[in-house]
Length: 152
Image (cartoon, rainbow, N blue to C red):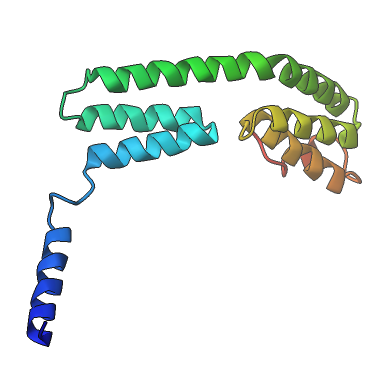
């Protein structure tokens, strides 16, 4: 085959693959992102992405496949909460008691245990930051150093 023919075939191939027919649609992108978030256990993001996929769905917003996927994610999320809730609540309760008693090392340790049960939990994350800030500024007393620490 001549060089000219090879160039023509390569050009034709590149035009075909660049065609919108092969491009990922918004619907496909949202589905891909939803599946990835779901597999990581990030159920809130998965629900958001499935909803966006439903908005872009060729079958309309009431796409039965999307609705089934959303139902399954909600079920998985509920099961996840039911499994982690007892331990999470126990760690938070112990941590809060230690925090209010000024036992910041114990509080931080238990807030971290709670975070292992529910990663990305805002309450435990901020409480760790507050306890570390208070520990660092311990020479000060009362509210004068609490003001500088993170708040909800």
